[in-house]
Amino acid sequence: MYIKTLTAITLCAASAIASAQAMTKAEYDAAKDRVEMNYKNAKKSCDALKDNAKDICEVEAKGKEKVEKAELEHKYKATLGNARKLEEVKADTAYDLAKEKCEDQAGDAQKVCKADAKAVHERAVKAAKEKA
Image (spheres, rainbow, N blue to C red):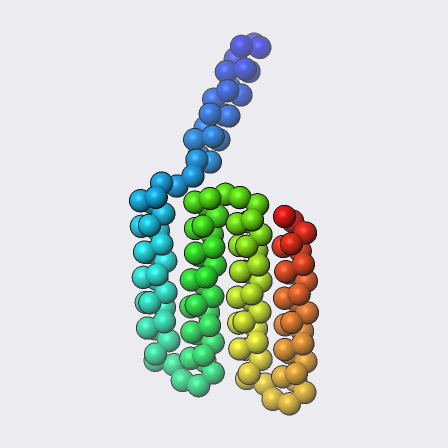
C-alpha cells in the first residue's frame, strides 16, 4: 500500500511539474500576436459607438489587452514581480474604466464617483504590493 501511495504522489507531482512548465518562446510570441489581434478587433467594434460609450469601449479594449499581456508575461516568466505587475495592471485598468464611466455623470456625482474609483484603485495597488 505504501508503494501505491508513493507512486500516486510521484505521478501527481510529475503531472504538476509538467503543467507548470513555462511557455516556449514560439508559444509566447503566438499568444502575444493573438492578444494584439483581439485588441484590434475589439477597438474596431468600438467605431460604431458614439460619445462616452465609444470612449468606454476603447478603454475596455485597451485595458483587456494590457491585462492579457500581463497575464501572458506572468505565464511566460512566472516570478513574484510579474505576479505583482499583473495585479497592478488589473487595478490600473479597472481604475481607468471606472474613471471613464464617471464621465457620464455631472457635478458632485462625478467628483464622488472619481474619488471612489481612486480609493478602490489605491487599495488594490496596496494589496498587490503586499502580496509580493
